[in-house]
Amino acid sequence: MSNKKYTPPPTHDVALGKLQYYCAYQDRCHQEVRSKLLDLGLRGHDLEVIIAELIEEDFLNEERFARSYARGKFRIKRWGRIRIRQELKRRKISAYCIRKGMSEIDETDYLNTLESVLWTKKKILRPDKVFNQKNKLAQHGIRRGFESALVWETVHGLFDSEER
Image: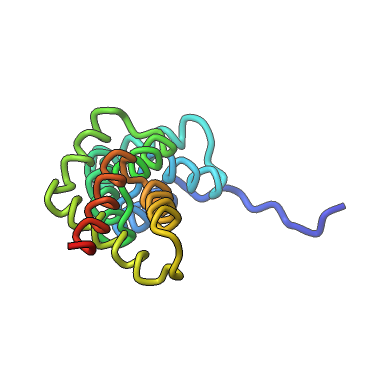
């Protein structure tokens, strides 16, 4: 027998207040909010009503979430578009919102970031055959979510500029 005492789920107003604070602190997706409500013990109709109220009061907005998520992961973590898109899909964000999120990434910044990521990695690689270094750099860029054709083009560019 368990020693845990049963605690009833919070009232509607208490749960709504907690979720408003949760959403105001940082943009959240519907899946995160649903999970938080389930953790609080809310189910069914009560859960859906609170989510609807949060959307109505603009505490919960998936397009805004997708935009800020894409911006943040690109600028802070320096992820590529593929990785960001996969993470948004994993959070069950709609294709429309994913497109809006991807529009936050400027093409020039994207190319500069890719080059910077690869250049930083290149500096810490041990001296090796050029073929092995290029391969390791390309793997690193692809793992971070950048498109493989773009990664290879940038890798070749890094080594071509060095040979001049």
